[in-house]
Amino acid sequence: MQRNSTAVSAVVWADNELQLLDQRVLPQAVTYLSCGDLGAVADAIRDMVVRGAPAIGITAAYGIVLAARARFAQSPDGWKPAIEVDLQTLAASRPTAVNLFWAIEHMREVIADTDGNPESTLLAAAKRIHADDIAANRHMGELGAALIEAPCAILTHCNAGALATGGYGTALGVVRAGFAAGKITHVYADETRPWMQGARLTAWEMVQEGISVTLQAEGAAAHLMKQGGVGWVIVGSDRIAANGDVVNKIGTYGLAVLARYHGVKFMVVAPASTVDMGVACGDDVTIEQRSPDEVLCLAGRRIAAQGAAAWNPAFDVTPARLVDAIVTERGVVQAPDAEKMAAMMKNI
Ligand code: MRU
Image 1 (spheres, rainbow, N blue to C red):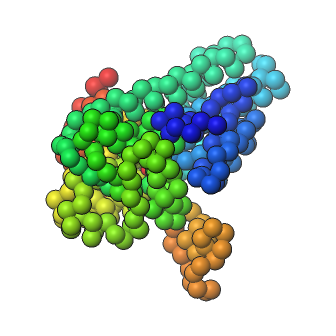
Image 2: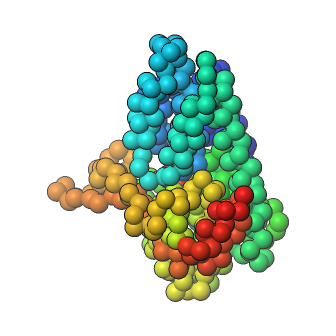
Image 3: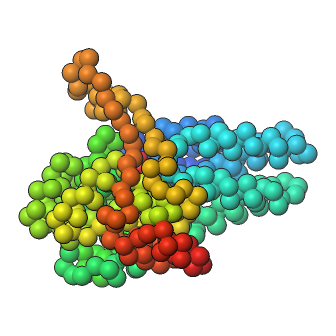
C-alpha cells in the first residue's frame, strides 16, 4: 500500500472499478473500498468514505462511468435518458461542494456528444478531470508559495491535501511547495471537530511527508495568533461565490475573523472548478447540515449530556473582505471582489 502522501491517491480507477481510500478509518487503517456501481459511489460520498471538494467531483466522474456501463448493458438504445436518474442520485449525495455539480455537468456534456458504447469515452473524460486536478494543484502550490515570505509557520483547517483532491492538495499543495522552497517551517493544524479531518488526515499527510506539524484544538487559534505563532492561515474551499465569498469547513470563518484582528494573512487555495459564478454571494450556497450524533458522540460513543441537542452545520461562509488572496490555477486574486473574480475566471 502506498504510504507517501504526495503519491497517495484517495481515488483510484483499477481493474475496471473505482477504489476509494476509506478516509473514515484513517490513519488507523489504510483500506481501499471497491465501488462497482453508481449506488455504491453515491453512498461513499454521502458517508464520507471520500471527502474534500475536488475528490468528490473526481469520484462522481468515475461513478458516471460505472453508471453508463450498467445503463448501456441494460439498453444500448435507451441508456442516455436512463442515466439522468443516476446523475440526480449523485447530485443528491452532498449539497455544498460545487465540484460535485461541476463534474456531473461536465460528464453530462460528454454524454450528450457520445454515440455507441460510452464507457471508454467517459472513462477518458473522468481520467482527464483527475489529471487536470493534480496539475492545477501543482501550479497553485507554486503560486501560493510565492506569496509567502520565509521563514513562516502556517495554520490550516480541515484537510485540503492529497486526500481531498486528485493528488498533492490545494492548501496543502501550497504547504508542500512552500516547505520544499524553505519558506514554510511549520504547520499548525486544527483538529477540526467533529470529523477530525485535521487530526486524522492533515496530520497524517504531513507526517508522511516529513513536514513538522502540531495539532491544536480549534479554540487555540486565537491564542496562537496573539503570540505571533503564524504568518498565514491557508485553507481550501468547497465553493467560492462570484463575489469572492468562501464556503469552507465550519470554523473557517472564525479563523478569518481572528486572522484579520491579529494581522495574520488569510489565503484560500482552490481550483477554478470550485468557483461558482452562478451564485452571487456565499449566503446563497446551501450549507450541509449533518447528523447531530457527529457532535454528540466521539468514536461511536456518546460524550454529551443525555437530553442535549446539537447543531452540526458542516460549512460556513467567509466574506471576501476577510480574504487576502484566492489562489486558483488561473492566477492569484488579491483582496477578492466580484470584478476581480470575473476577470480571473475569463483568464483561461
Ligand atoms: O466535509 P469535508 O471533509 O468534505 O470538507 C472538506 C473541506 O471543507 C475542505 O476544506 C474543502 O473541501 C477543500 S478540499 C481541497
